[in-house]
Every structure is written in structure tokens, then in C-alpha cells.
Image (cartoon, rainbow, N blue to C red; front, top):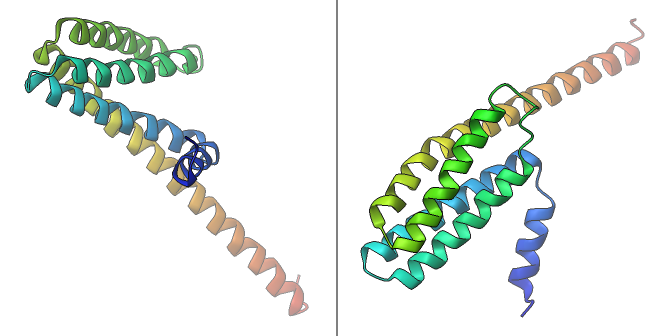
Length: 148
């Protein structure tokens, strides 16, 4: 069923920049891990496996989109993703909440790091826009005053 909410969510994802999209993926990954861990702890292996399966899909997407040659840490991040993928598969197959918790503990610092990086990029972009606006205003002002 394609309703207004679905359309809104689809538009939200397609109109965000890469940094925001990455943080959205990580936020959802953490949510899936929390839900999976909660379900497994409660003894509901079916729901736990479903949530961990969605988390696995996100990690697979992160793996497929990672360019390991783009930066020095690319290969190490790929190793983390690969380890996480195996952990998610094991946790879902075994219904082991301890393994799911281990995966969650691995993801939390990544979520924080990517949110920090996205915030830094946003701050830099805002500072750049402010600088350009100030420079343009200075140029217009000096021209209007007959100076320059």
C-alpha cells in the first residue's frame, strides 16, 4: 500500500545529502539492533531474527557503497562491517541476545562518529555560506557607495 506516509518517507530519503543519508542508515541500524536484542531477550526469536535481518540488509548496503580506496580507514571500516555482518547472521541464526548485544556495542561508536562527522560537514558548509554571503554583501555595498 502506497500512502501519503510512504510517499513522504520516500521523498525524505531521496532529497537528503549523502552525509544525512548515512546517519539515517546508522540510526535505523541501531534501532533494528535495539529491537532485535529486545525481542531475543524476551524469547521471541522470530521477531528478533526479522529485526536483525533488516540490520543485516543495512550493513550489506554499507558494504556495497564503501569505497575502500577513498580514504586510509576504508579497509579497516570494511573489516568492521564484515565482522558485524557475520555477527548479525550468527545472532539471528542462534537467537543469542549476547551476540546481538556485541553487535550493538560495535555499532554505537560508529553511529556517534558518523553523526559527529556529518555535524562537522554541516558546520563547515554553513560557515562557507555565511562567508560567501558576507563577501557578496561587502561587494554590493562598496559598489553602491561608489567605492572599489
